[in-house]
Structures are given as C-alpha cells and as structure tokens.
Image (cartoon, rainbow, N blue to C red; front, top):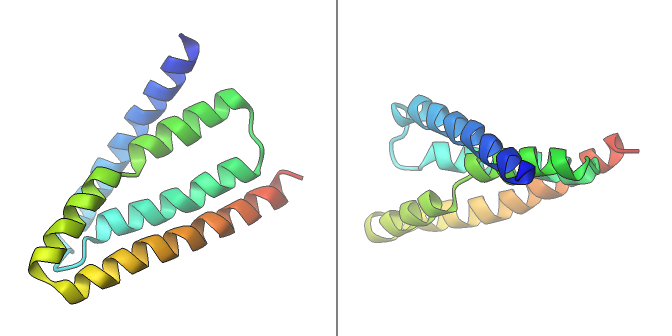
Length: 119
C-alpha cells in the first residue's frame, strides 16, 4: 500500500510539473513540440541520475517511477510524431532522431553523474 502511495503522489507532482512546462512552452512553440522534447530529455537525464546514485527503493519509487513517470510522456510524444509525419516530414525526422538520440545521451550522462555522486 505504501509503495502505491509513493508512486501515486510522485506521479501527481510529475504531471503538475509537466502541465506547467507545457503551458510555458505552448506560446513559444511554432513547429517543434518543444515542451515534450524538453520534458523527455530532462526526464531521461534525471532518471539516469536517480538510478546512478543508488537511492533507496522507496525513494526511487517516488522519484523514478512516480515523479518521472508523471513528468515524461510517451503518449504525447507519439501523437506529436504522428502529426509531424502528416504535416512536416523534415521536422518529423529531426524530432524523432533528436528525441531518441539526445534522450539516450541524457540518460547516459545522468547515469554517469549519478554514479559519481553515489560513491
């Protein structure tokens, strides 16, 4: 029961943070879905740090599974990729390659930093 509360409360915080950032970026977005791009890259980076510092399982459930699960958004990403595929193929490829490529790099750097901090 406590694990469910940790994940649920973390997810609520992550979703509120994502909503706030989406509203901030919304007025600035012309073609590239900047909010989702930023959110997923920073989420990858932070998740790498959380994993790397070897935090307790309760803290990881709250921050990693909960907050980062509510913060990052695969469903929005997929919808935006679909819209770009229909409307702007060049931006589609940039967004897809940038999101996955930079997401992996952010995860790697976060893991390296987290491993260093967790010593």
